[in-house]
Image 1 (cartoon, rainbow over the protein chains, first blue to last red):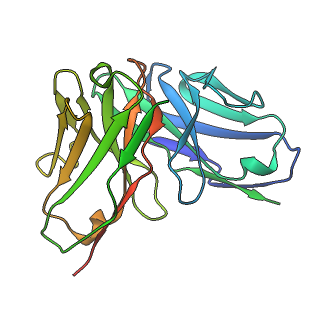
Image 2: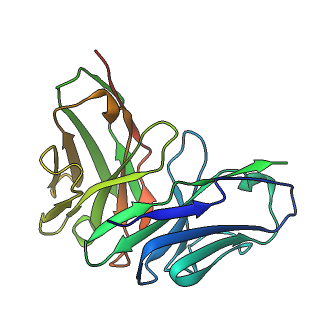
Amino acid sequence: DIQMTQSPSTLSASVGDRVTITCRASLTFSTWLAWYQQKPGKAPRLLIYKASSLASGVPSRFSGSGSGTEFTLTISSLQPDDFATYYCQQYHPYFRTWAFGQGTKVEIK
Amino acid sequence: QVQLVQSGAEVKKPGASVNVSCKASGYTFTSYAIHWVRQAPGQRPEWMGWINAGNGNTKYSQKFQGRVTITRDTSATIVYMELSSLRSEDTAVYYCARESGGDYYFDHWGQGTLATVSS
């Protein structure tokens, strides 16, 4: 089964900071990796798909990169609206299953 | 615009079943798969299964195999998820989500349905 590990679990940052979140997969496969933002009581919101493509309507301060087993989400200049929990999600083509990382909570420093 | 509207909160006793619906609108229903993802309090989202809204084919996570059934009504553009033999650990928010056109990510989500299992 796929194991997705995000780091850090919690991140304290200030408005304007550059923030990087890492997602590692236990198995090497494609770039079918997505990133989501979730705020309390809300559904996840798609930010990045296929590792580096920006979803419609998402600000350009969000970017994604990586391949193989290591992927990153970067917020170039943290804004007040960005304080939330972020999840990576990957699809495994052999098992035809989907899995999410454990999440990274971005808090105000 | 694409919308996925789910049914309301449920309270069930252990051993019972819960049925959650997801009404889709704003796109061609049969052209996209719908997935179900649940999230227990303070936990990561957990994928449960999906249905091809066009042909009705389904695939379920091994964890839920035998307990979950996903169906759809194409005329009403509704997808249903039934989870049986409920236990307290099934208390969670259940989401339906539309899969993008063959790219294995979820581009639209329902608002979520809280299912509470308690005696």
